Picture 1 (cartoon, one colour):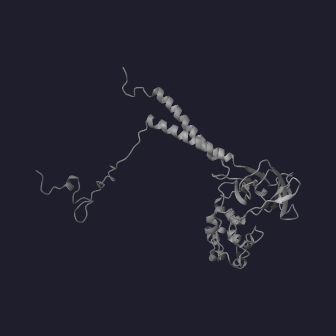
Picture 2 (tube, rainbow, N blue to C red):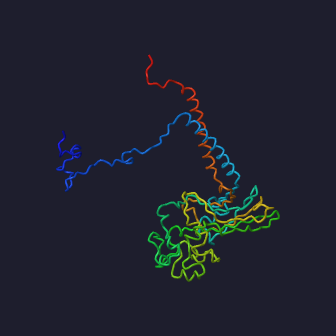
Picture 3 (cartoon, helix red, strand yellow):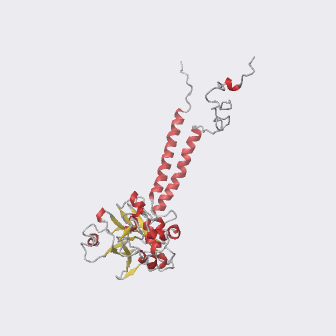
Length: 370
């Protein structure tokens, strides 16, 4: 018979005098609670991969991805795009003298014109981009060199910029607005496009400079101190322009809705690129009539006000004209990726089907035959 003083705690090896006993003489058990979660008894589903489930999955993925990839690739190829390099690195380039900098050319900023021909018309709206190569906007210190509170219209940050903006925080003992390396390196070339009629007449192509920035950037992230209806020259009084700028921030445009921190060229530049070769939207050429193309085939001239030297860091500059589709700009990578993944899956499905047909009916028993 069991002694009257015997308990389940003693059976488990827990005695009142053990080290784990509390002052009341009752020991605490270290066993997990008897619940489904702590005892790992939760119901689970584990798929069993068989030929009947794996092979159809490979074929279905292949049959879905390949047509999608072909559609994306064809759509991308239907987008018309024209690119012209106006860096002026070659002596034969019309912009060679400009590319050497102010010390080479007596008049600065420098002006140059590049003639080119469009072999096919551009329909619908046409987007003009400027492209830069070997420009690392993704450098960690460069990306951090800005003051978002200042760009959002905070007056205290306007007078006392963030220390992240160093060494472009102050100039002549005045706070720089906008501060930082990103703003200081603002792209400031001026590009103008002219159509040359068969009789030799130059017709300027109207370029839309508004509507090129993201809506959230224009109306949420970037604001002028005190709003847009104030005299910006008074608002920014006591601040200095960035070192490399030719004019202060309140003279970026004559349009009060596109001036100061809400200037769209400035906003587009402040959204840093992830790769050293990138393009940014510069202007939009809007279609006026359904009867005529936006840019007919023929001869054109690109007039450049050359303010932005790039040869010091072995960079290149480009002007790009492009149409868009429902999937955006020209980008064949997405279509090729879908085609590649679909083709690989379909090929693996065929290979596995052959293997299953040849070896699937063999005896799977582990017994060694006599």
